[in-house]
Length: 182
Image (cartoon, rainbow, N blue to C red; front, side, top):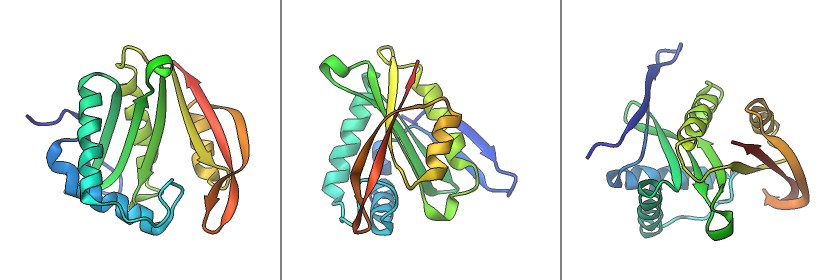
């Protein structure tokens, strides 16, 4: 079965993009993608670790199960055949089943083209279809000012800050906590 396509388009730069839900056969692209981001040590929880293909297969299997149960909205953004971005909103369990945790990443070579804004808009729209969702939360490195501004532009509100909450490139940086009600 083909995954549901959420968006097809062409950027002003001429770049063709497709945004869709993942499928089992995406596992190798996703595995390569996360390892590129981890090696870059960008603003994500992986900071140089090598993720195994086995781990990525287990992760994707779990995500596909959550998507099927309407407990997750996850979108992959492709430019041609290249995976350029991933975003998801995953619902919590039990007493936090109404809270979705947001995450987004874009490969370095595709940043600054508006793909993050597009992907965020699309995943938030898809998340509205999750029956239990009432609140979306996220965490952002305080040093990642561009991302924090984008989240505010999408209506996220800062509700806390954990001083030295993240270890980033050998030093501690604050972790900003944000939420948006649905």
